Image 1 (cartoon, helix red, strand yellow):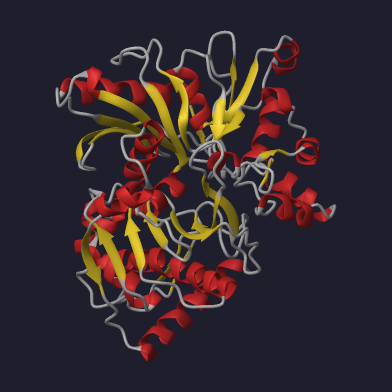
Image 2 (cartoon, helix red, strand yellow):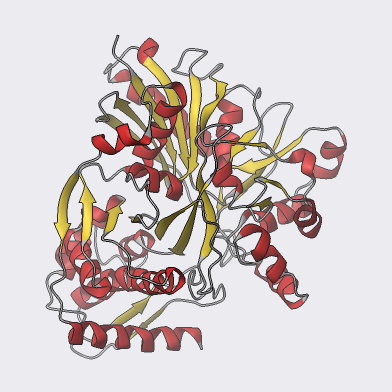
Length: 496
C-alpha cells in the first residue's frame, strides 16, 4: 500500500495543504489566502473562521486531485504562524474574538511597562525571549481583558486559549484534544525553556490562567486523531507539529549543531541549531526550542533572529504603491537597474525585530534623487530584505563566537535568483537552496512521518534532502563594507 503524509501549513496570509509520499517527494499542494484585518495603525488581526475555512478548502481541493486514497494517508503534520493568539469557546469551538497576529503591536505599551518595572531579565532567563508585543503572552492578556463575556465563560470552564496549532488540532479532533507542541509553546513567553512546562511566575506576570492553556507535547508523536473533518475520514493520526520556523529548520535537515537556515516568507527568519545547549543570546537574538522527538527525548534548542517584514515588503510594493502587478515581477524590475542607486528602504512597516527590537520604528524611504526610478525602489527593497538578515547573522556569529556554515535558504522568495545573489553577497556566505523550497511543509511531513514510524530516524530523512542550487559570493569585501555602511546609516535614521 502506498503511504502518504498530509501537511497543513497555516501561514500569515493563507493556508497550504500538501501531500508528501514515503520517498519524501511533495506530490501536490494547494493554497488558499484569507483576509488580513487592520482595525487600527499597528494592529493586525485574523478571523479564526477564515483560517479554518482556508484549511478545509485546501483539504478538499487536495483530495479532489485523487493522488491517493484517504486510507493511504498515514499521518497529518501541522506547521503554523507561531505567536498569533486567540481564544475560543470549548463548548462549540467558536472564536471569542479575532486572533491577534504575531505582527500586531497593540501591546507595546504593556510590554514597555513591564520593562520599566524590571521584569525583562527574569522573562529572558526563563523563556529566551525579550519583552516584546511580538510574543503571545501579552496578546492573551489583551484578549482576556478586551473580549466581551470572557469572565463569565471562564468561570463556566468554557474558555480555551492557544496559538494557531492548538486551534487547528482542536478543530481537527472535534474538541477532543487541546495541546500545543514545545516549539510553539516556547514562543509564548509563558513556557520555561528548562522544564518545558508553563511557568507559574510568568502566568501570574501576564495574568493568564493556567486552566485555559493547552497541554505541552513533543513535536513528533501521535497527539490526536481526526474526527468530523470535511474531506477526511476519522482516525488519521496527527503526529507532527512545529512552529513554521522550527519546521523549516527540520525540513532543511539541519539536525546538527551550527546548521542554520533562512526562510523568506512574510518575514524572514534565520534559525541555527544549537543542539542540547540552551544558549541565551547577548546580541539581541532569541533562544527557542527547535523540536522534541518523542516523549522521552531531550529537546533540541536553537538561536533565532527574525525580521518582521520581508516578503510583505514586496506585497506593499504591489498593493500599496502599485509599482508591480504580481509579486514575482519584483525581480525583473529590480534587475532593470545596476544597483540601488543610493536609495535605501528600511521596511519597518510593523516595527523592527532582531537584533534591534524597536516596535515603534516605522519604515523609511531615503536617498531619493531626480534620477531615482521605480527600479531603484524595487532594488532597494530586495537589498533591504537581504541586509536585515546580514544584521541577524552578525549577531548570531557574535553569540556563537565563530563563522556560520553555508546558509540553507527556503520560502517563496528563495525562488528569486536576484535576491538570493544579493543575500550571498551582503552576507559574504554561500547559500544553498534545496530542491523543495516549501521546507515548512517538508518539516511538518517529516515530523509526522517520524511520529508514526514512516521514517525511523532523522538520518533517514537527511538522505532524502537534496540541494538544487548554490549561490556563491560575487561582491568584493570593499564593496560589501560600503553597502553595509549605507544600510547602517539608513537604519540609524529610522531608529531616531
